[in-house]
Amino acid sequence: AIARVPSHLARHDLTPRGAILSSVVVLGIITALDLIDGTIGLPFTVGYLLIVATAPLAVQARGLYTLVLMPPVLLVAALSVIAWLAPEALVVPDLPESAGAMKHAVSATAQLGGVLLLGQGLAITAVLLRIWSAQNPRGWRFYSQG
Image (cartoon, rainbow, N blue to C red; front, side, top):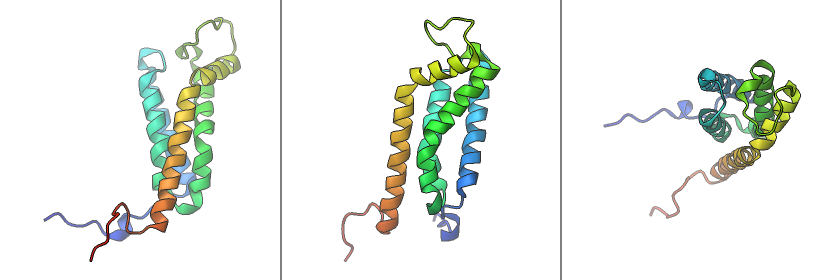
């Protein structure tokens, strides 16, 4: 038989600060690995989306509002750091090579606008699921056990 996980291990234990710090560290690692080929691409995008979708599931209830605000700040901050350290990694069509880091960051953010909207939607959905599950402790069971 599979042992049951003790309920104290299944709680949402990350503080808002811990969830944000974890998100930044993990996105930094994913970005570094994605920069091996010299450009930012699909691994960065998928990593970002997974981070913003799962962070609200691991945070204490008092940190939910903070994690709803995290997706745009996380993306803009990551793209700004990339634009400052390796502007050639952000492939933006029609952007001159002489453009500064700020122009690279703003252009890359605009180019990834769909990803930003999807990430924000995933974060809001995760928060709403957390709120719903707190109000419905029986979870996904829609039937009554008699």
